[in-house]
Image 1 (cartoon, rainbow, N blue to C red):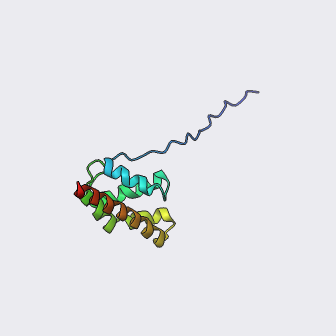
Image 2 (tube, rainbow, N blue to C red):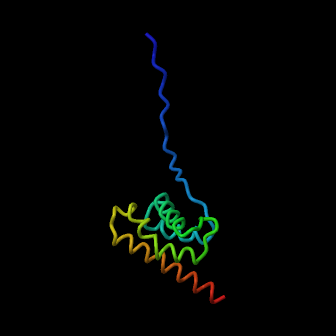
Image 3 (cartoon, rainbow, N blue to C red):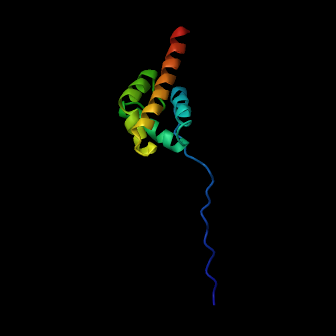
Length: 108
């Protein structure tokens, strides 16, 4: 009687793929990660940025403001268990962050 070959187990490494972008995208992503997992926040922000015609590498403050106003809440809904109130609160936090970044930029 032959022994069956040992099955190779898949191991979870804890590695989460991260969407790379410029410093502005990364700062918004860090703020989103306070509320969602890194993977979910990356997916939501990436989808919102693509909706306004930008990529994570070349996104500008104007693109992000437009993304927050037009498409971020819709991009967050699947990751917030379809809780519109939670998605609105998170989008508000990102909007406040962008206001702060714009104020710092224009005061220089």
